[in-house]
Amino acid sequence: MKLNLIILLFFNSFLTYGQCNCATKIISDVETKQCTPSLVAYDNTYQVGASINSTYNDISLILTVRFTEKSNTIGSDLLVFINDEKTLTLKLIDSQKDYIGGSEICHAKFNLTEKDVELLKIRDLSSFRFQFSNEDMYRTFQIKRNNDIIGKQLNCIL
Picture 1 (tube, rainbow, N blue to C red):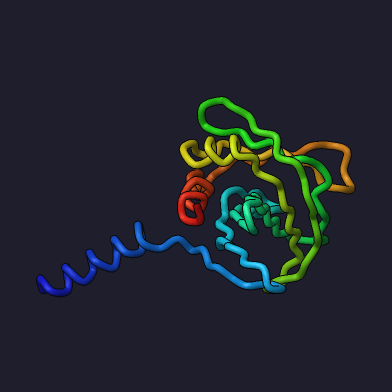
Picture 2: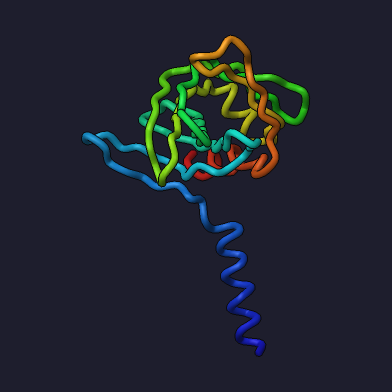
């Protein structure tokens, strides 16, 4: 019984503290560190995941949006509201549609400056605001889960 409890505690601590969910990959002879997207926001129509990607010294925040119907691309910069009432504006680099696991999705890549990285490493997310390419209005998604995932992933890859 004690042995089972010790094993359970070991694996729990390993999963909680020892696992980054990030991998180093070589793509076209370029070393890239990619973290697994985590669900951070959702509503009846969308699921929004966030993750970190690093290539050379460029660090990016990747949003992955899953659609219940037809997908779209993100057509604006990303406003990131963090828990101390600060707002970051991340520049859109690229946004593309894809089809994964039976759903239409889009990936959008946003540039992180050194200042952005330092803030996101120590602050939790509050909400994201962006505009889809075919819409005039902006959408704001309140962070409902994993509000600390970006900080954890940044600490893993840096």
